[in-house]
Image (cartoon, rainbow, N blue to C red; front, top):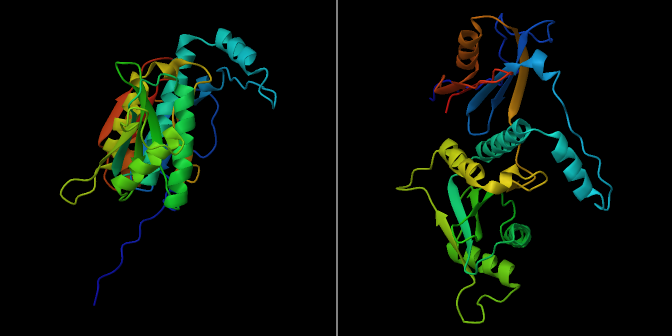
Length: 288
């Protein structure tokens, strides 16, 4: 006879601690976002919610045909500071990391070109064709992708994926995407290559490490600072993490209470944390 089954409670099911407020208070306070991902990881982010309400928000309005896009980009760019760009890039890296955690990726797929392809826009189009071919061959294919620029100037892609994929089939689909059906170039050489880094000795990779590994390419790449540039790509059907938002009155014990909150909702407890300077006083904590 088997023992009692362990049932994991969701963030909504757990009772809040006494310092967790459901409504935004008046005066100095922290706004706290708690997320749990499909792989079981839990992440907490807190910042000065009262100061964030005073921040600027940009919502560029672009015509449906995209004719005013360039003008709108230049207008918004002139109104944004370097700090705005850094925050925008940080949000993109965070979103990429969250999507990798949500899809529970366990493999890294790298797509490369033989030619020195330096136009990132054309590379994104190649990737789009490749993804359509993959979805047709492997229904339910999910990925999160970040581009990286080599020293010679050519771009290539790193994708986090889940599960086994035959490298020969994936290579055929990638070469079909970049050559339009012609697997080899004029010199008879392969137009590109793929590499799938699989789990070693039968054990699955740590999804959190894959997420950090993939997000570092966005930190290295110069294109992340360009307004309107496409920073990363991913499947549209990746499930969003479970989220809980609450507030805390600003006090000297906030860091302690945040750590206690993560311990309350997490399965592994506090593993990493950091505090960022600046006007919003960002605090980040995670159990992975």
